Image (tube, rainbow, N blue to C red; front, side, top):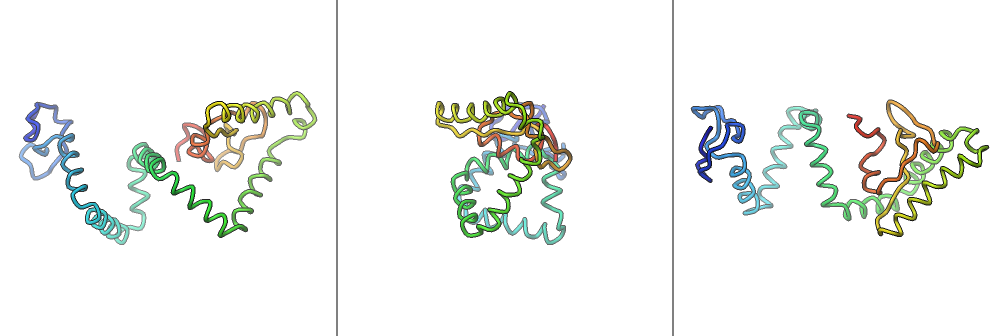
Amino acid sequence: MKRCVSCEAEKPFGEFYQRKDSPDGYRNDCKECRRAASTRVYNFDVERQKATRKAYYRRQVAQDSDYSLKKYWADVDRSRELNRLYYQKDRKNRIQKAVAYAKANPAKANATKKKYKLAKRNACPPWVYSSSELCEQIRYFYEEASRLAELTGVSYHVDHIVPLQGEAICGLHVPWNLQVLTASENCSKQNRLVGESW
């Protein structure tokens, strides 16, 4: 156990960041107090802190072009959670940028849509179209997505459990490969299976 010099609470060593030049190898303030202090310093002069961090990042990338990739894979779960939180915080701005990009680059936007439509068409076997029962089952998912959207006011998508354009595997446009997800869940899933690592 170790006493924090800031909050004066006795905590396990795991609650302290490591520090090589410290006699016991750990900082004198606990992780919670250290984070609070860092937040205060950051908020005191946000623009200066952003400039400092940007300069540090550029130095690291100049030394190692794979710096970002290594940092991402060093703690994948944390990286994905931070990306998710950043997207939620900046969602409206990101959507506006995507819409503006599509308007400024209609050919690229149309090519992306066309690619998906072709993949969907190619992923639907002929025997599905010839079965009214299977077509009805597929229609159900789209009707359910619309019903939930009207009921909740939240946008819903029909998602392919096994993606149509996955890197390792491609699924089919069949009833047992469909599910209804919120738009945010579907967009965050992207072209990968749930639980699949990158």
